[in-house]
Length: 510
Image 1: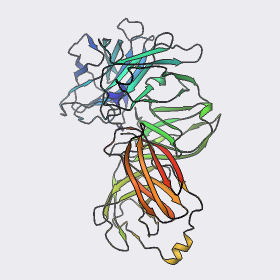
Image 2: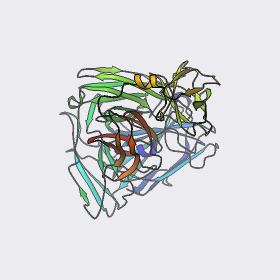
Image 3: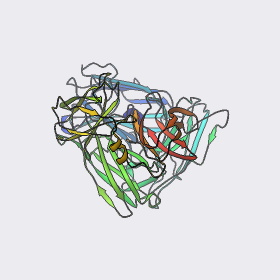
Image 4: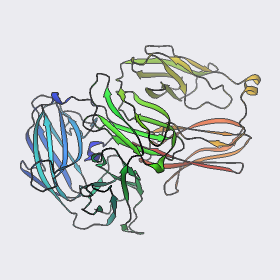
């Protein structure tokens, strides 16, 4: 269940299969033999592990031959880990009692696809299985249907198509394709997840393939329509690919690490999860290529540095391998930001390394900040998120353990202004980082003074934020957008000034 598996889109529990312990007293939906439930109801499970704090590897299978036994005919759906006493769920569902006591439990309302399943719980290389059946929702308000086309010779049946709420921790609804590749998701009247994201949830079973489109975004409205048809996907051989393995700094595989990739003009976005061997694969179709100025990264929790990697280009026939390593935070950098020696108020500060780490923090009102970093990276470039008008843009190189990483931005002098090279063209640049959570930086430039409007809109065209709405002098600028109060999803930002209009797309991914 991917949305159980990535409820908070955080990751980074690295595990080794030989550390698991035996699961006992397993119950799913209160049953110790075969569970049953209706799509859209609550699913629950509980089990014991012999050692407090143990980690269990869970795997959900589609029981393709309906024999209630795990065998080679069954289709892998999803997998994740669960940690005894973890109330947050680092890389899977939380243990809802939050106690490190050898007893693990979980429950959540889910729109599982009607069908037969086998759930496996593995510790110490010993697997305990439970079969079950999900029956259809009695009365559906919305029906979302479509078709999945796969290459000749491959099975079109038992592909899971998932409709995921944009609300954090929200419900999701699934459907299984039939032997013709058709699917139909039946769900209730809940529209709080708008815009919903429709995607294929077990595409990893098609090794070396690309899925097009990666996502379809739907805003459901029962007063306008209850049937949403022709939501079609195509699985095909990849014309180019980016793949690799994700490990922690100790060399352990990281399962379900969320790897994202996008380019700076917003025309390409994708995120995938690593498999149970820590491997990720991102396939690109011929229609996607070539791609330039790509940014790759790992979503990480606050105990790890967020990985970032810049890929200049990818072309047809390229099969790029790039392994990623999660570095645990074990050091600090402290300092102060000032403007002409004066307190700046609260501002965003960034510490980055071109091919490894990216950390963001905020100063206090007096400009003091503290970064939690990894000492495996020696040099970090320190910069601020928004340069006030009239100050020189500057940065410094800092190191783990530094306690006086101070940066004083000075007022522009006439010489500075003469050397600034006023832009010759109007430009609106792609935000960075993208995807982002919860804030990002947008840059733009204007060759002459004028009234500037820079606003953010959702996919329905509703204005959700105003970043600039004033007269601005000629020059280059950057502003921060904070999406902390918005749901995950696609948004647009638009610049208007002196007859020039430009719009870019970006993704908030919580």
